[in-house]
Image (cartoon, rainbow, N blue to C red; front, side, top):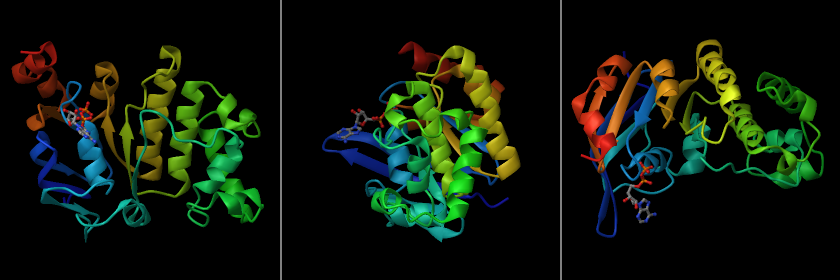
Length: 247
Ligand code: ADP
């Protein structure tokens, strides 16, 4: 099957630091793929390279039949791929619904359209449906800044879905989420994947979560690709165990 995302030989340095060295990964369409590795192993840098946040030093990136290596964030978002952040990026003074409306395809990047109520009704309907999906419907008219951190992450996830992406890159979706809510979040991620057909590439430190969610897992260490395999293979890979133990 042709991958929806194909990263080939990507290198990214910051001054003298080689954050990613010759990284190649392939994500099949419709799958959930994990990206793990100790802190500083280069996961965030790879996400940023993929979505066009910064140019790469070498290598190529293809998404959904398009060469995207030279493209930047808005162009790649228009092709249907975006990332979420470990720390949420929401407008704290605006309501949940307004935050959702800003993320709609029609108004993307134009908060003033939302402020002045130039909202197509279908955007509001979709916003409310997605807020319902993530369990925030009752809070839809509250200011986003008044939500708990976990609820803000759910809001950001729903915002990412507003633009009907083909693929989402999720940066630690369960970090900071109350453990009792994690199973519900995993269930929603699986439904987004299975019901809406959104391909997911997920950075996750919670091993229980990623081993359950992902069909395949890539592991980075020191900016290099260390291992690739099914969760059971990764779990039992001595190189992966050593990398996490700091060997
Ligand atoms: P991870 O997400 O796995 O924790 P990162 O991609 O954040 O790893 O970091 C990989 C390496 O690149 C680290 O050594 C980090 O200090 C370095 N790095 C990341 N971003 C920058 C930057 N903007 N400037 C300088 N060094 C950076």
